[in-house]
Length: 348
Ligand SMILES: [Zn+2]
Image (tube, rainbow, N blue to C red; front, side, top):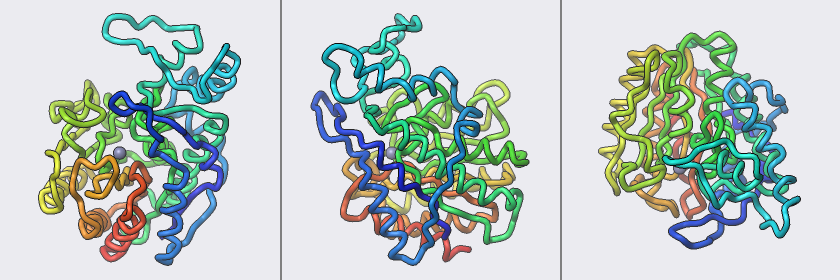
């Protein structure tokens, strides 16, 4: 497996996170990427440093005002009297008021959906590096668009993750939607249809939002039931797309503590939908936080379960780009990645 990563992604090092009213250490740490890269390297996979691609591919998906906010927010924050050491909003627009704000605190509330996407001094550099990883890995596959052979695949070890990021909003540890950016690269490089299969334990709400009115990118997500789990306000089975995108979004919410066997049946259903769609490329939003050992655990997938997930995905006869999403530090994080990659390559 070609594993793309960036040695700059660690510049984004968020410190705090509010969970049920408590200020706790943010679990989306640079060490996640180190654990994943070490596990991949030790398992014999080839690590490749990403190249820089600038903001052009990012602008194909994201709003320019939002990008300007991400770039300038930290300096603006530190220019306020008595700022905290990270940009974290404490006021948000909502159902009853949503005027576009000027004040720095209010702009943070406008562009950051929750408290779990703090912006620190190195964040913008690290966030861009994560998108560069996705674009570099996608570029490595553009000659394989439409391929039905078994050799067209790569893994983008992105960090921070991206699937909760909308075109103009951060949230849930995510800022730039790496999977969406990669999918758009494939469209721009000649793919007629791209499917994004999201196996992160959280619903890929940002990805769904970006492509909700489009038929050229099929979005599918297996995730913990949002009636009881983040992101709560999206991820329901009734969300099937809008206008031109109607029928091109598939949500498969799963009950708490769902284990390997039910997960595999649900994954088979999603894969059958992908096969009928006949995409030129499949992007897999590869969260590993469905693990029973994850600190944010909701589902109960074992390490062997990740191998089985890898096998099923690897058996699809499409060009496949794997994009790292969530998956937090636990005793099995590295093993879950290598189990997935082993299963994937076994099927190839
Ligand atoms: Zn997640």
